[in-house]
Length: 200
Image 1 (cartoon, rainbow, N blue to C red):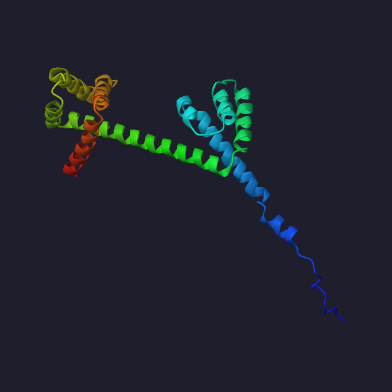
Image 2 (image 1 turned 60 degrees about the vertical axis):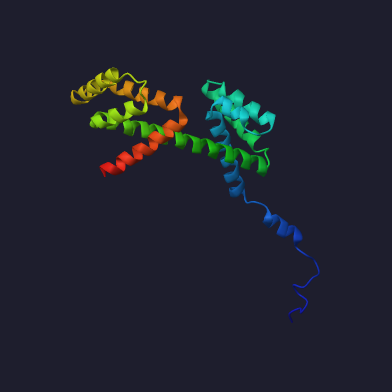
């Protein structure tokens, strides 16, 4: 005859519940890999950026030390050590580092967009003489004759499939203009966008 009290013995399985609440081995492995990759991103970043990241000094020192190692095996071991140090960080510390790296990516995207705007303007200069007139009106300090010569040479380089010496020099001039005045550079981007819509 079945025991009616079977299964109702008075003990609680809290210890089992707690065990199930712990991350699985695969989850721990995933977290470890993520922290290792985060550490590698910091190692690949410029030193001045790493120095400004909010993190424990021992972790920062491990990353900066790893950056100086060029030997393949030595660097591999140093990267493993960085990963080990990263795993000592708390969740909040890791979140701060993640947000910082995301901020770098945003800055890089802005820099890329600015370079693309310069490239579009250079193409305008080669395709339309009015673009040079507009550029000279905005920047009267530029050497008009030199720019006309560069544009003529760049067109010739493209037509004859020659090395783009003048083509690159035009880009450098536009880039230097952007460095002199950030607001002016922003205005150039807007004009480049307007020009593109006019062509469409």
